[in-house]
Image (cartoon, rainbow, N blue to C red; front, top):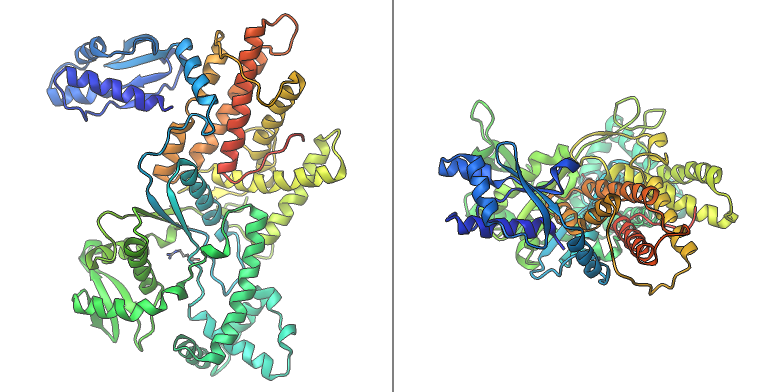
Amino acid sequence: MNIKHLLTEKTQAAFVALGLPADTNAAVTVSTRVEFGDYQINGAMAAAKLLKTNPRQLAEQLLAQLDLDGIAVKTEIAGPGFINVTLAKGWLAQQLQHASGNARLGVAANTSPQTVVVDYSAPNLAKEMHVGHLRSTIIGDAVVRSLEFWGDKVVRQNHMGDWGTQFGMLIAHLEDKLAAGVDLEQVALADLEDFYREAKKRFDDEEGFADKSRTYVVKLQSGDAHCQKLWQLFIDTSIKHSDEVYQKLNVTLTHADIKPESAYNDMLHGIIDDLKTQQLAVESMGALVVFLHELADKEGNPSPFIVQKTGGGFLYATTDLAACQYRSHTLNADRVIIFTDARQGLHFKQVELVARKAGYLRDATAYDHCPFGTMMGEDGKPFKTRSGGTVKLAELLEEAVVRAKAVVQDKATDLSAEEIDEVARKVGIGAVKFADLSKNRTSDYIFSWDAMLSFEGATAPYLQYAYTRVRSILRRADIADSFTAEFALTEEAEKQLAVKLLRFEETLQQVMKDAQPNLLCNYLYELASLYMTFYEACPILKDGVEPTQRNSRLMLSIFTSRLLKQGLELLGIEVMERM
Ligand code: ARG
């Protein structure tokens, strides 16, 4: 059920009756205040401008043609030409009846599934995953889950950075350690971060080491077996680390989704030759560059996009062009979505421009780079450890669970020790995820343990707790899992809850279109809050409540619990029966 869609169709039919084109923008929005009804139709204003007539008059004509019989109980014109629509309780009850009898919770069938490639997480394998990869991983995963729920064909691609120049440095350092007699097993790969730091220090300070590192990159890239063997060690160790993080985080990425930079190696020569043949890439100071006039600076200098370095090495950019070709032509993607931090904005603009010119991206493939802001510490600076180092994701998640345990223990009354551990895990991980997912994707946000672990406000604990409350009401009602009854809405609080329950599809569509899981977070928070208001205003299990009313309220409760669970699952957040 998509009320917005329905009202849009009805409004457009009315526009047609007035002689306006069928695609005139109906501009249907959700009303911001109860006194404006449930939805507003705002299209008369823009249409009047086009027709050069009085908007209020046009709104009146539109209203006369608008057929909302049985759907709305009241429609009225407000301000310069808004039409406020108040939906009928009986109609809402019917829609709920239908929606609740269906596993998709009222979300319509997807009649034209798209193939969507989602590029997310993508850590660099020379290092351990740090908080910078949290956002890409969980925002990407929430969008993936939403698209799959809707019914699109999703191809997850974990574009791991496994091929950069830093590997030459790591291999050279590893080799020296081995030569010094350190046993391979003993080499401290367990702490990649330390290993990387040591190697980097030598690269910066030690004479000859940088050159050696560069030679190793070339050797590695030209298939030298010894280098490849050492390189593989880093890759394996690193993937083991990311596996742990994914599992802790409850994200859906598996080994099968790893399509790292090195997977495109065989395509890179072809891409370069082709860019030369098409005269898109030209030589400039020994490198091969595509100059983009579309992205020229103020002085008119075109933006340079280097596709091959002096000496022949390929770059991150070259790989991304190959990835475009693969995704658009081989996978036949209708849409490619890439989640990285905002600093890569220019890179992806350049990639798309070049890929479109060269034909690596078909016109029919949308290419959406979805940037996100930085996670900040409470001091307002990028989130760091106390000593100023990068925060390892694995450690952050462990801390979340420990902190959640303290909070849960405080609240729990009748949970066993194992149950407390389980709840603490779900609350801790859920809290970190929700705090991140609920922020506007493109803004920076402040990471605050206290805020995210609070039971008040839009947090995972609040929603998880709301879920347990609904479940506990249902347990007390002692009804069978298969319980069904008629929806009958009388009170305003029931109606408000009903409208919200029927807005799931609208929300889902918007989440997928804008790749913005925060819209789903808001929706679930509002749903839980409306349920609480409903529960206070409308007794369910008290003596004296009419059976039809009690049953309808139980149906509202069941639907709310299903929707909360499903919605949180789309965010990758687990619920529990008690806490
Ligand atoms: N590995 C990169 C990083 O950590 C992100 C890769 C994103 N995907 C891509 N196709 N470039 O910044």
